[in-house]
Length: 430
Ligand SMILES: C[S@@+](CC[C@H](N)C(=O)[O-])C[C@H]1O[C@@H](n2cnc3c(N)ncnc32)[C@H](O)[C@@H]1O
Image 1 (tube, protein in one colour):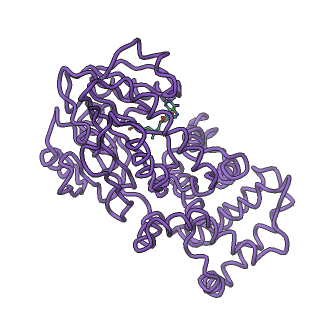
Image 2 (image 1 turned 45 degrees about the vertical axis):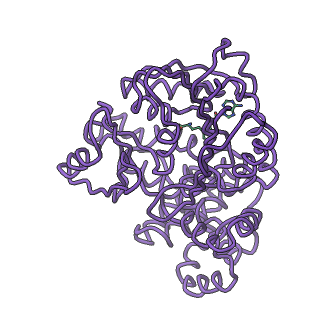
């Protein structure tokens, strides 16, 4: 007999939750990851993984699912029935992209109308999903002929075709894949080879990277509590390209270092793993996310000063100090991490890019006076758009004669089994 708590917890319809999550992203403009974290507490472990798979998946292939819905329905649900439209997309996704037997996927989805309080629409949802099953070959061919296979918004396509006239199809392809899971091995505990051995002992397969010596890629992603010695701080989940930041900054013990826009602390903790005796100040504007910097420092048993602060107004939190090194991981369009956050494709607008570029440039300009002479500043974004990256650095160098570029800028692009899209520039104060 299940316990009353378990019975209560299991008294939900997972597909209805997914439809609600997708509604909240697409109709209310909320980000997917925090929504999933919120709904995670309402479901059991097995359903949590499926909820992620469906919600991320629908975001990844949204235009394809919308195409089929348009073909199969006389009139798309709007207004009060809009959540049922997303329930239909959830059903279609399962039929195309999961191994759930079609009859189970369809009937579970149809039952979702009850949880969404639209019982009268049960027949319509059932009809659309059954019609899809009958006509799927023809519909899939139509979708390919329709040419809408990039699964990206047109403003984004235009921008990357302009910036990467040759390799933009590879970027699109990488964005449409499920993201690989990369680990950063804590050099205070093990080198990558030693930790790989620990993973092997637990039957977890991984590969290393030629360039980034701390990085290991897991062949199949898995929950962190399955990783050996995770709670003891032996490893951290961090993308390959993100791991370049701390190496490029090259922190030294005894130095005063500012990590600006630091939450949740992925790079703060890497800086301290490389230089545990550095005096690090980690600052972020978002007080909720700042809590996560503290949690990450605690798990890895590292020490830093952590503050809530706005990069635009350093005079309010800097206490007059100057830094030997500054990492500015600027807020950006996140167009380099679309495969990890496919909702970005539908939440971002073309007009956001100019606004973000303005904010980035202003933060960079305002923090520059707080770098000591000869000090190093690393400017980083997880964007692949030149407006936020190389163009910012060109303008900054033209307008700041006490700044010099130390090495060529690096623009990493997302690749199928490799890292995310990231940009780095290393500047020195004269
Ligand atoms: C790309 S994330 C940082 C990731 C982090 N460096 C890491 O490695 O874990 C960008 C961060 O910038 C913060 N942010 C946005 N605007 C800011 C501002 N004006 N001042 C300070 N932080 C800001 C956001 O809250 C967000 O946490």
